[in-house]
Image (cartoon, rainbow, N blue to C red):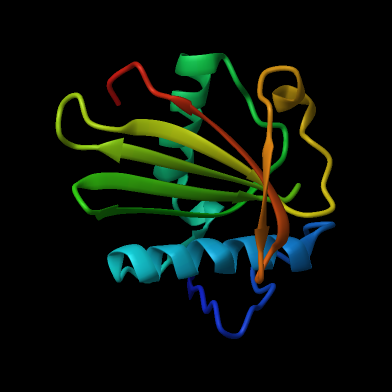
Amino acid sequence: MSYLVDFKEVSTAGLESSPVADALAGLRANEARYLKNKFDHDLLLSAAQDVPEIVDWVHRILADERDLQIASPVLQASLFEADGAKRAYLFYESGLSINVLYSLAPGAKRAVGFKLSEGMEVPEELAQRFKFARQKSKLAGTIRGSYFVLKGEY
């Protein structure tokens, strides 16, 4: 079942099992607002078990690029094309959000971003590898984020 994220009426739908569901819902709404304002794209998410190919694609990138395996279960995922790039979003039960920007043009921007919901600890698998910068969001409170540039082809 698909879920269209509404950034005006923030909802925890699909995220109820997260210990930081309210903060994760705010983070998800923040991402939806960014996509709508920047690309006029609505964030439509599916339950992770309904789109294993998206989850597998992102997890393969993490494993190949940084030998990373995220311990938390994925709750929701999305993959779409906007502004000449494939964009994937995964929202995890722990409160983690991962997005992949994969430009279709050779040599253009390709990166993986991590965002942590307010109130969650940095996941053990990321703690020693990445430094997280803070940003404020009206929808999500304080978001901590980091990223890395992709080197491989996916």
